[in-house]
Image (cartoon, rainbow, N blue to C red; front, side, top):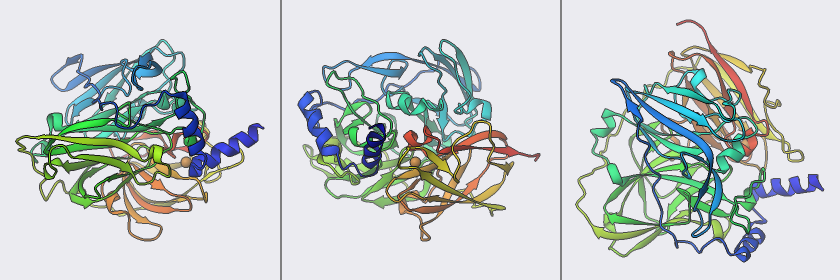
Length: 471
Ligand SMILES: [Cu+2]
């Protein structure tokens, strides 16, 4: 029976075929509102508790909390500083950020800064646990270019449920170069944290591993399919796919194009005009949407082009309000990418999941905290080929510390939307990519790489590598 259930679960995770049934049940429970009936909220910004000449100190407390996700319903969540999702940290390149982290949950946790170039002891790796009732300090050098990063729990075997229940937040890194470009900023620079969830009849979050098909409520910044009242001007939207398993393909209901200005690790060389933007879990993309081309009163839905069910099709509705003065611009040149360095080593990673047991493997091996899979020379550039060996299950791939560029997808060119600096890349069933991974010589030690469909990494689809050697 249990096997059958797991099988059903995996089938759901592959195609979402049973979603209509679950959606029907959910509607019967009467707790999830109709789409666009609640306003979108913007996560609070975390103020430093103190600042020194070169560092900003933040305090992050993980604790159980209540959140109003569905209108009028109190839902128990796991929260950073009491909010769902966690507060947005806005850091400045060239200044260190120090996060004092307190774990007031009943389980061990870690905090990983996804996309951050940090020392291993500050990476919040899956085994570097913060015990319940204890605290520790994470130091982020912030010596990389401006980018939309995010922080989330990474405690092995628990990260999937912890992130699902709320332990995730946006970490925006600003720098001077970007500030000088004149892009939409301030209240017009908005984090859009995408998740999905399954609610019980009591309004609680139901967590079942691999339950893609059951998580049919789409959440934006912690609200179900909200509306967002926007001024008729340009907005920078920082899209973060913080869902455990769901892939999004962002599109406007009008079919209109928008501009992508950044990938995971920072600005593109030039804005890309596109009508769709696919994002697998962990990926980010910054886009600029110019609402001044619409008459006030126009409503435009941000849709998920990957959705196979009407209940999960809509993400968010933009309600265009009055015209305002807009001094922002999207310049034709954004930021030059660093030169692609020649690779000294080629590696292959084959991702697979046993559809019968739900166990995840990379190159045939499940995660073992005691095993180092390979060693990278400090400061090296390497070419990695990554293959999804499953024929129905979606994976993706994330490496800690290093950023990369996508060289090839399925033997052809990369998607237009992934031609920038990346740290996470999608792998549809049977798909493959070749990437050029570039290591910053300032860092060495042990890090992990894994599928960021975190119900999969939780089940073993993860490994460790070492960066070693003198300069
Ligand atoms: Cu996977």
